[in-house]
Image (cartoon, rainbow, N blue to C red; front, side):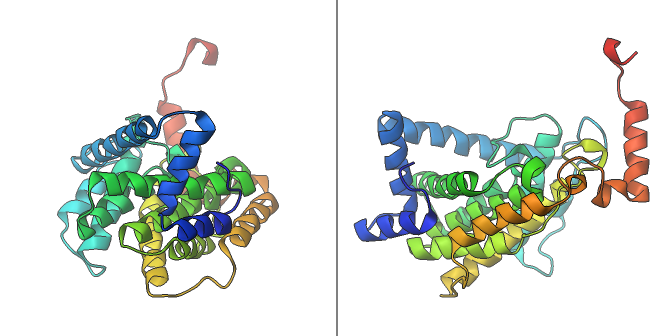
Length: 295
């Protein structure tokens, strides 16, 4: 992608009267020397996989480990709660896709498998609310991809390097930008939404129980989808991020490097080392199938 920061990307889009997604798609086509229709078709397939994963998870599915599952179905069947139908639907979908991932199902790792529920939940739910076409959803996915590319270049998307702020936090930033675009916001508002969402996750640790991307990862996807929607609404209301998005991204990378190794996907700290976390890990490890090399 020819743009190395979100400020440049938003400025280029605004100057040409385009969405960030359209500029990102154009740049991808030029960089890879691939016709835009082919690039678009690839993203359309991603959108379809996202829909399939959400539907499969909402029907009820359990992980291979048995530690998690069916929470998405419970959320969907509970009816509107205190947060309202839109938010509850997004949370249910975020849980659904994450549960499909934990069950070794097919998902789109956007930006990672551990945070794969956030973006589908937000764009599908917001898309329904605003009556978006598939073409608009696809263009929103390109916007999310552009945000993710900048984060990857300036900081990291890996929990092992930056904690869960790099995974669920980045996913929330990507989803917030996509949501603003779907709602008719400006490129600048998309970038502000990304900054607001990412700021809300700074310092979030990666502490998977038993080393599995299930507890607390799945529920963090639901919470991150909610954060993305909140950030989108703030940006659409004209609220600006005092700290520019590109500076927020750099700060996230610095915070990630400052986190001790125990809080970066090693399962040696945080919730993974609570009494319950240790008990669950012990139960899983004692029941896990043994391979020839284990004996």
